[in-house]
Image (tube, rainbow, N blue to C red; front, side):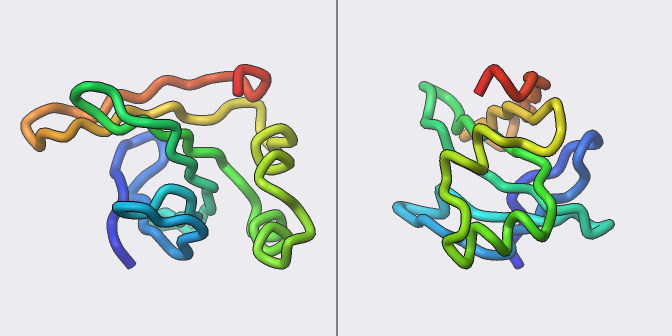
Amino acid sequence: MELFASYPAFGKLRIINVYLEFDGPKIFYAENESGSTFFVYWIGDGPTFENWYIIPCSKTKIIAFEKKQLNLKSILDQQEQDYFYDIKLPFSSSEEITVDFKHKNKI
């Protein structure tokens, strides 16, 4: 399990299952050290960073997505919590991760 990102608000996220890969994982689910699960979605690159949405998501919903009972739009539009993380992972290890909290209707 590869470490994706680490930040105090969500802990150390490790990639568990990749659903889309192109020059690295782009859509996947991750877990932190306490077992909380997150749906992670790449939304593009900026000039100096990768931009991602990290959406808290129950294991039940992730399993439904894997069984094709839910689609990507459902995961994004019907979030279980009011807020998700909009993060910017810098390309340079000398820069720090930037995290913004966004309301689920801002997706």
